[in-house]
Image 1 (cartoon, rainbow, N blue to C red):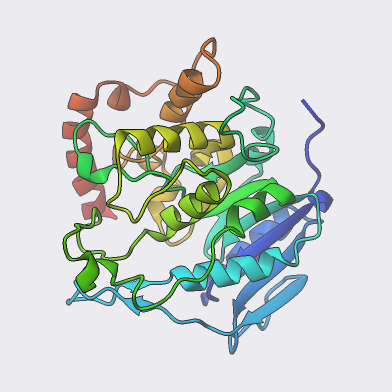
Image 2 (image 1 turned 135 degrees about the vertical axis):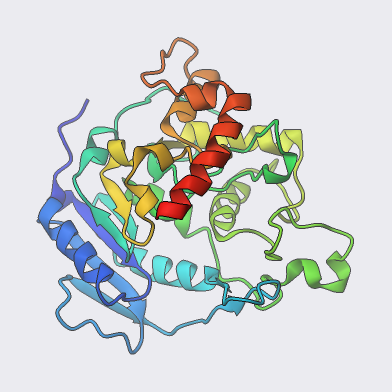
Length: 329
């Protein structure tokens, strides 16, 4: 174990729109928990940044978003180009050894994630892409295999809420994602040449989910044997490669391990819903199982999850759990 990482060695890239209350709270929490970190705020031209505490400000031209056509009763935008542009422009200014990438609506209650950085040291060589593992959120990182519902197998889907790692590794992961052609990308399955295909995302016709675009763009760039045409192009082979890549290059943390939550989603703070709200998401328990399976057969998991370990019972419980929670939220 190395000495605990110091805040002066960290660049924090905060990307996204300025929210009237959440962004100020986010920045205040960063200053409190990482007092000497370099804070880079990457947002949009015309944003009101008065009174916000940051070191570097980047005002980007907004590339816009695309309305998802199947949503008729509400506005549902694909903000992927916004996410890619604001993230990449912010990363270009990151100067320190480590980088924490956050959304502008995240909040640091503590820095528990720093204590996890050197854990899970065993890795297999073939799919070890990064110099060091990257820390990421369980919400909403997708677990690629689901024996109950093949429609929700979504390989390379890594949550974009926050990442922490060596700056060189964070850039390797995120700068692999480029802006996409719109509105073709967001309406991919409506295009005549793709009419014979079926999206796995129900109401979303995008070629990839934004989170999947991040993971797939990175690993397909560095591995010639990882190739998919779109999100519907899945197989046992590609799912297996996704599991190997994620198990060897990330550590998926729940709130209790990371100390990072999202102010927009109250469920991100409460452990019963961190990774467990839907069984197709990672949680720390099934990350430990994946680590043991692909990296270190001698590893003994530290956590126990009855809901996940008995998936038949788990599905019945969580269907009730989800609706009960949403009723009271």
